[in-house]
Length: 228
Image (cartoon, rainbow, N blue to C red; front, side):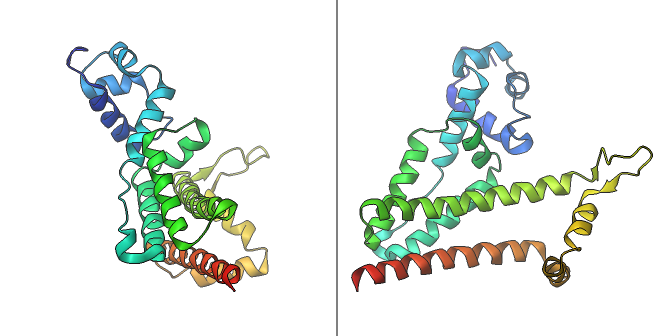
């Protein structure tokens, strides 16, 4: 595909697919050019450098968030939808939240998502700094959950823990190694034993839903205190 026939939109969409598959570390202009059948120089010509491309890809990803029907379902249901949709977005694009920590990722997509969040918590009755903190609390929870997922995925990929120290010491499965440490603490050991037979996907879903409802309960209670 010649440089003249490529568009920025095509490059950004291909970059998102590559980021989804290989993460930020796996993104390069060379690999992107191979996907599009074009030279790496064409990528630079259209989107500049890798950092700018990540920013463009992230902004496109944020644009996938749907606007909740605030008037029809009320602020709490709208807040729940927005949090769940943002979390689902982070699972579709596991590089997205880490990218926010590595680059100055900001554009119309993220600004629109933030504006939707402000509309939801403003409708709830929050004003001033409390409005800012309500929006921030929800986003911080989602980003934390996304980073926790990324850590879990990294543990699953790291089958061994290299560099164990003493010469001749065998390498150990990283999960077994971490479990061995946690098992030395009684409360951690009890929870590990309780979770051992659970379905990991179900536990992740229940953990997230618990956190969402706890936050919404807390925000609703705070509103009640202010109005009393």
